Image 1 (cartoon, rainbow, N blue to C red):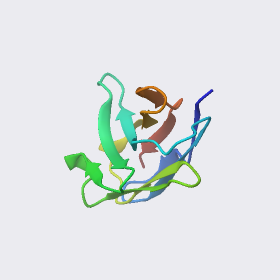
Image 2 (image 1 turned 30 degrees about the vertical axis):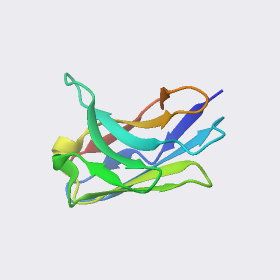
Image 3 (image 1 turned 60 degrees about the vertical axis):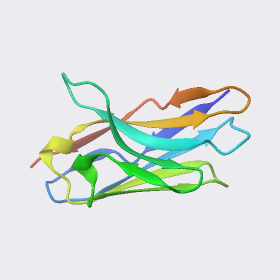
Amino acid sequence: QVQLVESGGGLVQPGGSLRLSCAASGIRFSPRSMGWYRQAPGKERELVATISVDDSTNYADSGKGRFTISRDNAKLTVDLQMNSLKPGDTAVYYCNVEVVIPNHRYYWGQGTQVTVST
């Protein structure tokens, strides 16, 4: 059974930093892709950043230059370092992994709240 456990969310002031972590279990092979998405109230879920098994990365424009995604294939973890946070970054952040063995599937974490406010 695949499980994704997220941690690191919380309340931070504008300009502050947070580091989100996601640990995957129940996966035998390194996921093709691991990433983070977010969903703000009243909005659709959107891409934040993804990182492939070869460490190639993809960032949404909103996070370029502020967010850094990284993964550890041995530990099956994916982290998102978020700096210079803005109120517009407030959302529930979801971890996502794409596996292709034995079947092509996407898995989601339960989400962690990030609130950027004074």
